[in-house]
Length: 463
Ligand code: SF4
Ligand code: SF4
Figure 1 (spheres, helix red, strand yellow):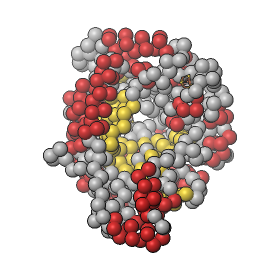
Figure 2 (cartoon, protein in one colour):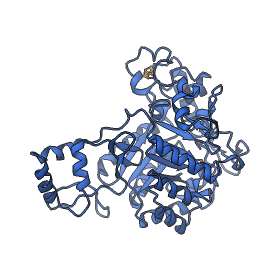
Figure 3 (cartoon, protein in one colour):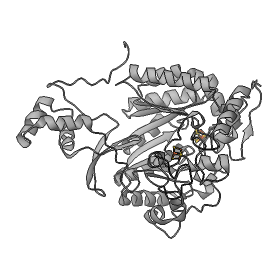
């Protein structure tokens, strides 16, 4: 493992533990519990674990901590044991822990799998700075703990530093989800000074030929590498987000190494999920089953090899899964999304479902009211709406019937079982379709833009 800095945990009495740079211990006033905030995670440590964590300041030694705890508890060893077992997630809380704020749909990149809706919201409809600040304040008041500033490209907003500062002021853990190409070092430094807690940079490959073509933007890859380095120089925690598909899966080992070389804390290996722009580009992006099997093997090996150095999250593409993903942790259970114009959505793709009315922060209702009472949030909440086979399935409280947007895209009815599930009567059909599209090898992309998409020109696109 020469050349890698190790985060493997080896604790002795002389160790001076400190929380990892991406994690923050905070008392959640709404729920009256201590929580650890980290990218994509909220953990609820045990009471004794909190006592231990509060002592992890990087100055006290473990020996000093034990002495201090021994004065308070008869068996400090229990506290340390609880700390090791901590990780009970806060998912049972009834109000959202994290919110995705899509500040704008404007973006210089044109990714063919972009999770924004095909009908993008124009710049003129975006919430103003004051409206966003009011939203952030309201979110903190109702008990939201994390805000993910996303887009489009959130750095296209001139007020981003002001919004990050406001998020800090109201006590929100803030995460910047960015393509990075518009960032300067000065801007990133200002964001860090404003209290930004974490940066996630998307990568389209591990080198410019593939990455810039997929992004539809020259020199994007080089700029991303530069910004990733600045991120770490400024001591901000970094997640590399790599969206994978048939045309870049062959680079997966190099992408993993790139994340290590960039000193990232986390790597998200996110296979494309097919709705919105990705559905338009499904034939060009769908991997073969062999590619997915190979990718799963590569990730498993890397997870074991890089334990303590790089955390790797892996999302299997729905079409090749046996069971659907627990989309958004269940519709209206843990998460919501605010569109650039202020619409509150159960997920970023929810507007692809026709027939649902999504209320805006500009309406007369509070955000909490919309979350709890609006028809759109309650339509697929819980399990009462489920048809068979979900209704009598043992997994219904585990995956909540999968993705409503995918059910709508593939069956025309968001109330159907997600066809990604092998128990869906439509599963076999979509699996065969995926296989035949992957085998056809038509690689031509439709780029994402405000005109409904532009077909790639000037290359050799396979079949
Ligand atoms: S996926 Fe690509 S096009 Fe879409 S917002 Fe992100 S960087 Fe921009
Ligand atoms: S039948 Fe429904 S609840 Fe059961 S595994 Fe499939 S999607 Fe999940």
